[in-house]
Length: 86
Image (tube, rainbow, N blue to C red):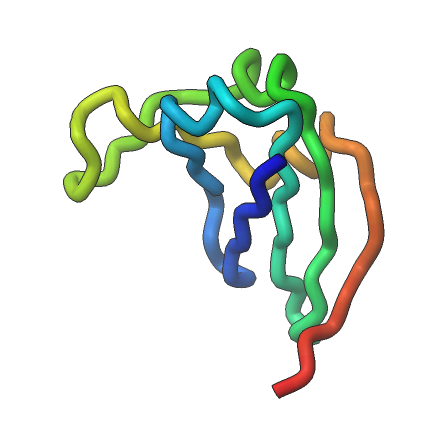
């Protein structure tokens, strides 16, 4: 399992292709306007079905795979909401 976090305005979360071979699930932790995070989970197969290659210039081509926040919201299983204290 891997947990990927996204700030409120971040539209995608990414997982390296090599890591996708070693995990069964991807948890997306998406920040809300109130500062809490909603956690949603996709199976590896769901992630693979919904992913697209990363367009980040910092990645080696075809190394990173991304899924949209709205796909996590539409297809992922809601787990819980958490608030991180500082």
